Length: 130
Image 1 (spheres, rainbow, N blue to C red):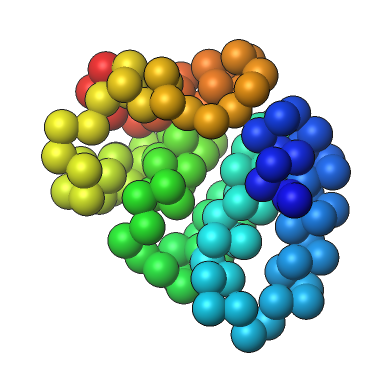
Image 2: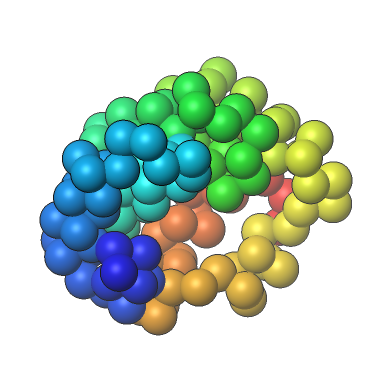
């Protein structure tokens, strides 16, 4: 539910639903995904500090998850954490050689164009290739 709310623009509703999932899912094997989804919801709600915290939590649980590395790349770039953004961008390219911001933008599953643009701008700011 939380992920769908986020992708359709209800970021506050997503944060509430995903926070409940985090609280209740202490034994859920894919908990890294809940943390990452909370990071995306906060990023799209323009709370980059919270996005960073949740992205780092997800990273502690699963360090090679591409979608979280993308979140961390964009978030760190937006926050001016250049060295960290570059490290995450390098991890993205190691996981997905040939990654392209333009191709990613075509497939990124957010309904709101502004959400997609804001995220891809963060990826470009970190130096990921277009």
